[in-house]
Length: 300
Image (cartoon, rainbow, N blue to C red):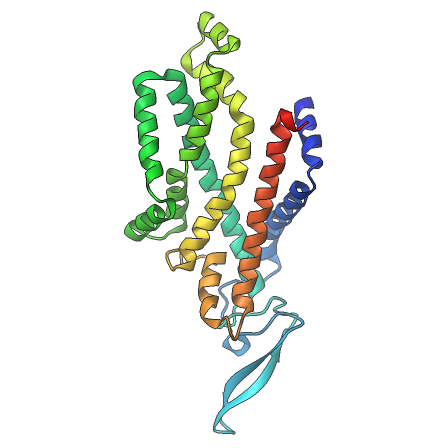
């Protein structure tokens, strides 16, 4: 507990990290309670399509039977839809909240899978050495030669675009950096006195790995996990933006994809999810930087 308090005090000195943490906590809260106060993100109302956000007005063209052609009218934002609506009249606030849930879900679970796989491969490779190290590291090298996004697109294109598959694909292909990091740290830890003493006392390999090696790499793993979450979120958003995301969920990438053709007439459809994506990515990066400084003894 004292160690946690010590690191927390060091993180609090990093103002940008605290700002990022505040935003992520806010995002988690609205993702959790937002759906109870907003309409369904899939609810369609063509009578309210392309309404701008509160405080904005946009000139729109609509067909008038009386005039026998198109007439120009001005549409203003209404409090029923404070962030505006899209071309089908769907509320953008509820879609942004749904996108926050999807992004957090993808980022946390995909990164968790990648961290677990990478940590186990890295620590096993360094601890056992020899042929095990050669095989695992050559496999890691092969995985690193494939462009991550292109590999992700290929797998999703071949096997489908469900959100579960996207999470698994990101997790199963994004572990190489973790494996390299954990291996390098384990190589120095395995010759330490406490590891040698544990072997002399008859401790099993699993006990040494899980009770001595992995706990001593946890600070680096936490920092890497925090910095990897934005990559997973961006990967899902990129897939959704090019039309390979799960069409059954309202993710930020899907909203961006829907709004790219209306950027001239309904700019808010693309700008709002893009802005939320930017804030989320930079917030996680700020937190990662703060944690890295906190865990680094040389920054004292």
